[in-house]
Length: 288
Ligand code: KIV
Figure 1: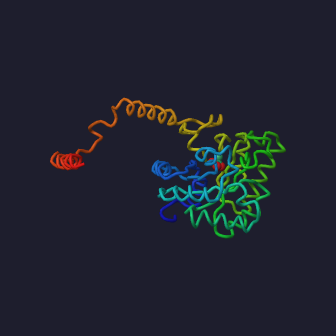
Figure 2: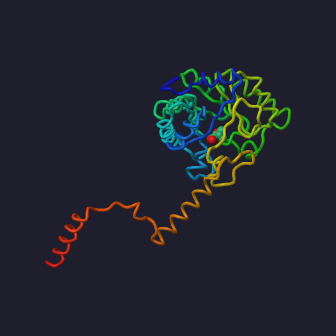
Figure 3: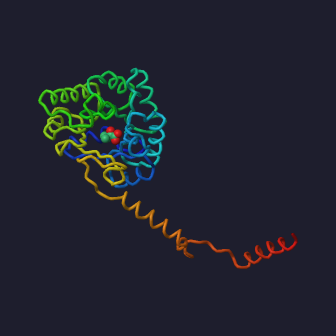
């Protein structure tokens, strides 16, 4: 444990004990604090921030500076959870040196304990180098949104035996390169189960069925505050978007009608001070 937070060893131990691991994304201080207090094991500052909080069309435009800023807000709030910073598109693809430097920013500036990298065999050397630099790495295979264009769009991966074998191979190579945990997105449940049994490190699923060692969801999706329709695999645990819309409309109506703020929301002056204030103002206007 570092600063009282769970470390990668504590997360891995949960798999060894057969306990499920919980992970949610967060991008700001209040949400991270609530998730941490709820006992979520790991918080991912995902580059899904691009879609869900920064208003981009997808994750591609997200920059390192944006990710570091969001990670700082999250880590300021977190006391227990293991915090992972998600390396955005082109922050690890240009060179291994640049990847180490950017991974270091998540830890040094952002206060994260690990970084997540999308990709399989082609990021093996990068993963190895970052781990050698002392930073735990979380792999991300299956559907990798940063390269969705190369995968035929946002669709289930590994449906055929050949495609599934490639994903299993990715997981094994990532583990050999030192990845401490692997996120697997949008693969059939049987494949996710197979992956989990083939590697010792925890396999955290999103849209990949119940046989994984843990589950991750984008918090805005599960709370019903995503701008767009959430993917089919998301369970909505709350309808905060509807609650925010109702509350905002009520505020608009009450301010328009003059019923907010009421006397209970206002601060009053001492009557004697008010008389002095008004008296002086009146005297001044008479002099003019
Ligand atoms: O960016 C993100 O939120 C992610 C999760 C979908 C795993 O990568």
